[in-house]
Each structure stands twice: as structure tokens, then as C-alpha cells.
Length: 81
Image 1 (tube, rainbow, N blue to C red):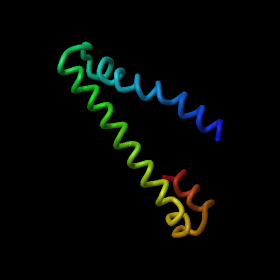
Image 2 (cartoon, helix red, strand yellow):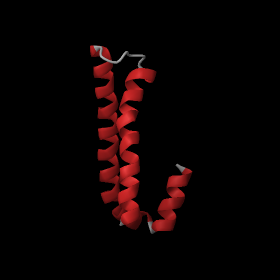
Image 3 (spheres, rainbow, N blue to C red):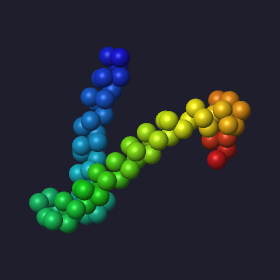
Image 4 (cartoon, one colour):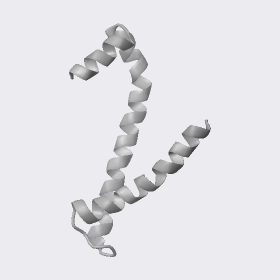
């Protein structure tokens, strides 16, 4: 549990500065401008969608594994895809 807590603490700054990176490097915005703020929001929205998809897949992976015949087959199928 301690390792998981430290992992989350370590990832939080990455997520925080990832939105700034989206606004500055990807969309070439300047901090303080409205366009930059909109682009930072776009980066945050993308990470939110990513979190929702990961959350849904974490709930669906067990039934999906049962459907394809076990964890080994699911792992093999995902690697082929």
C-alpha cells in the first residue's frame, strides 16, 4: 500500500505539468493567453477521458477474460491486436 501511495504521489506532478506541456509545446500557446488556457483545458480533458476509459476497462477485463477463455488467451489476443 505504501508503494502504491508513493506511486500516486510521484505521478501527480507529471499529470499536472502534462497539461502545461500540451498548451505550450503541442499547440504553441503562450502562458497567460486565452488560447493557452483553452489548450491546457483540452489536455486536461484528454487525460480525463483516458482515466474514464481505463476505469471502465478495469471493470470489463475480468468478464472479457472469461468470454475469450482465460487470462492467457486474453493476453495473447491483446498482443495480436
